[in-house]
Each structure stands twice: as structure tokens, then as C-alpha cells.
Amino acid sequence: MKNVTITLDEDVLARARVEAAKQGKSLSRYVSETVEMKLGRKRSQADVVADLLKGPKWKLGGGPLPKRDEIYEERLRRHERPDLSASDGRSDEGGDRHRMD
Image (cartoon, rainbow, N blue to C red; front, side, top):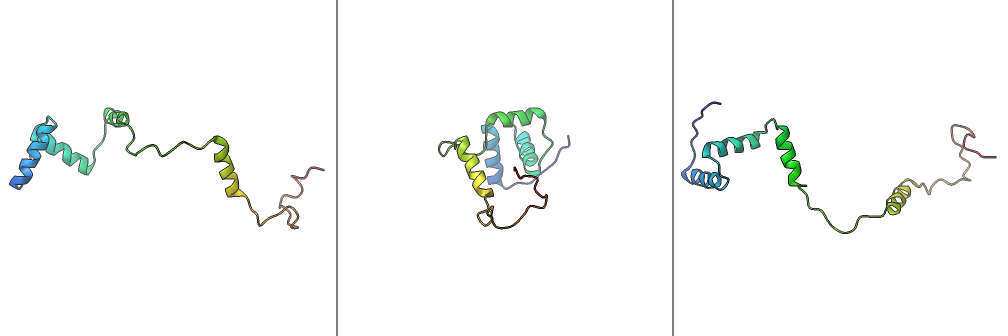
């Protein structure tokens, strides 16, 4: 690790000291971790697991989930082609593969 000298406004320094104390960290560690978060850092597996265990970062809820049949009905409706009918004279390119006589 390298030592770095930085210059801060007095009010910024005071707020940083208070925030570091709230988190139970030294000012040096607080500034270091804040810079790492801003710039990004290589995350250890322990950091990833800790974030995962904190839970989702989005709000869950909003009502009951759809039933399985409702999901499939919606997907089938998306793929229906009302502009094509069985008797419109079009044939598929593969011949009569799907025909059952």
C-alpha cells in the first residue's frame, strides 16, 4: 500500500470523519474503500457472497404470480397469425410433411 496526501474542504473532512466513525472505520480505510467502490475493484468471493446474502436490490411484490396455464396462453397468443388460415392456398416449403391422410 502507498500513502497518499489529499486535500479536502473542512466540511467535507468533518463529514467523512463522522461517516467513518459511524461505520467503525478509520478515516484512511473509509476513504480507501470509498475510492475503491467508485472506481471498481476486484471482488473476492467473500464480497460476492456477502452481497448475495444481503438479498435482492429491487423491490419484490406487486401481486400474485400468474398461473402456468396463463403464461403459456399468453405466449401462444403472441405467436398466432390470424392473417394466415388453413385454406388460404399457401403451402409450406417442406411439401406435405405435416399432412396426415
